[in-house]
Every structure is written in C-alpha cells, then in structure tokens.
Image (cartoon, rainbow, N blue to C red; front, side, top):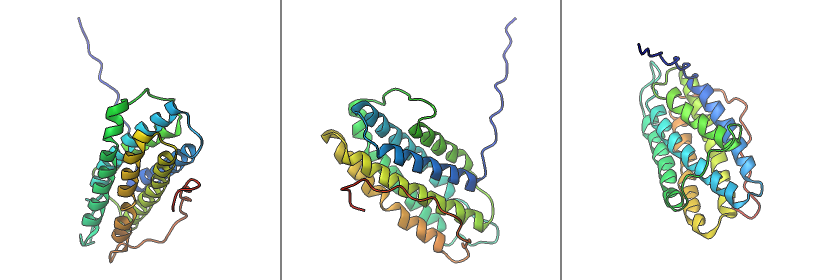
Length: 213
C-alpha cells in the first residue's frame, strides 16, 4: 500500500522589519563582495544573482506598499512605495537581455553573499505579503529597504564598471532605474503620521573607484 507523508510545515515568515534588516545586511555583504575583482564566470554569476534578487524585491515591495497601520490614513505611502517597486522591476527587466544571452548559470555555494541576498529577497516576499505592525515598524522597514537599495545601486555600479561590453548597457540601465527608488521611499517615510526614531543604519556600500556617486 502506498502512503504519502505530509511535507513539513514551513516556518512562519519573520516580522516585516526583521526581514528588511536581513535584506539590508545581505545587500551590503553582496555589494562588498562584488566590489572585488571577479573572473568572467563569477561576474556572470553575480549578474544572475542580482537579476533574481531584483525580481523578488520588486514583488516584495509591491506587498509592502499595502501596509496600512491601524489609525493611519493611507495618504501617499502606497503610491510612493508602489512607484519604488515599479523601478525595482524596471531594473530587473533591464537585465533580461544579459540573461537571455548567457543563461542563468550554475547555483553557487549557499553561503555565497549573492545567494544569501537572493534568499533574503525571497523571504521578504513572504514577510511583506500581508504586513502588519505600527507606523514605527513600517517606517523602520521602509528605511531599511532604502538602505538595501543603496547597496544594490553600488553593487550594480561595481558590476557595470568591470563588465564585458555586452553586459554594460543592461547594468547601466538597471542602475538608472535603481537610482529612482530612494526618493520614492524617502517620500513614503516623510508622509504625516509615519514617523520613527532613526535607528542605527547600515553603512551603504561604497561605489567602486572611477564610478560617479
């Protein structure tokens, strides 16, 4: 007689702000790793990881846009965070041509910073699907998302600065879309009633030498 065994239940997603901090830490680590000299195979792998992370982060941010704490008017938070999500997805789409040309590549070590970034972005989809918490929690998550984006901007610039010619245009276009995200998130945090006491922020990754800030 055949028997089926139920798959183990997945652990619940972390609170939205905790997922945002994990994302910011992973983005910073990946950006620092991609500032180092990369051989062609590792560079292609990093671009593939960036592609995957941007897609999932765009999806996750669309979920974050629906976060409306009790007693707080919707105001423009949803519009601003939705605009940030669309720019993230535009950045993802800018890398389509590179991945179509080269393929996704092989999966790296699970402890590789790019892999950790991809996992953090995927976890954010679950954590931000139905976010709840106070206005302070929402501001903290949004601020950390902006910190993560700053690291991704630097990471994309690093990869573009050392890219082969057929990768450069897509990476530069992705960077241009990413550069629009922080302003949308800053506007979301500034809206009336969405205040939080600033916490210790992660230091954004630095731009590589020779790349404009």
